[in-house]
Length: 302
Image 1 (cartoon, one colour):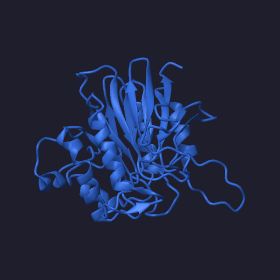
Image 2 (cartoon, rainbow, N blue to C red):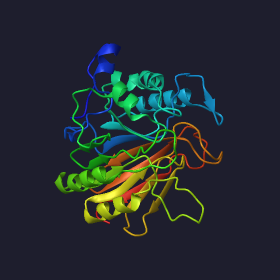
Image 3 (cartoon, rainbow, N blue to C red):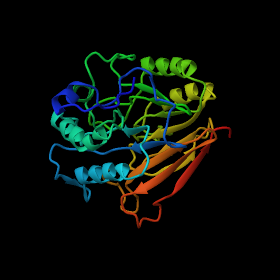
């Protein structure tokens, strides 16, 4: 089940589950607001040194700003989904300690937080810091999760292949689990999330930078009509397009941390789900950015 954080001491919390458990979870259908609100973060890149700056951004300050903005949105989210690269470079234990501390205000407001793993995370340190030893692991060596609400499903995947190496991989075990899970989960619109971007064709001599088995993943997603979108991070770019072969909507999340090109926005995204559609809205950290407030609509029946 997803974890909604009761009042705990910091020691108790670290021993329990910060990210939700690794088995399918159900979010209560009783919501104070309609539509359902979900919050999407990606690439916070938190270091133990909270003053560390990279590419003109102080990562801890950016995450703090995003957390504070979520708390002021006026509606309690069903969950905050953090799509990988929680840690700065190589997933040190102290990086995760810092990350946990920075998102503690969400816990204090009983908001569930669910995390995926990116290429700058370390699975062992991540699981040690943010899950409980008794949590089931449905895919050996991977951190996966399913969330189901009254309106939709989220399936969170683990594309970490090697710490601090750019490409990602899901692997045969996880792909098999994905296929079975999509077949078994409630018959509702479903969004799949993973850190790495789909890997496109490679020019001669070029190395992969995305998910090397994304073609196999999309072959599975296409089998299940309930799958409406794939959400990813990694490229530090806010973008919306369609997967050419399947027509599945592709949402590339902006980074909480730094951008690779100064014209791009950083920040976070709201995702509001109704029985008819999912509306995603960019909340840029620079409210004067031309894309701040930009919306993407995914129609469930399109």
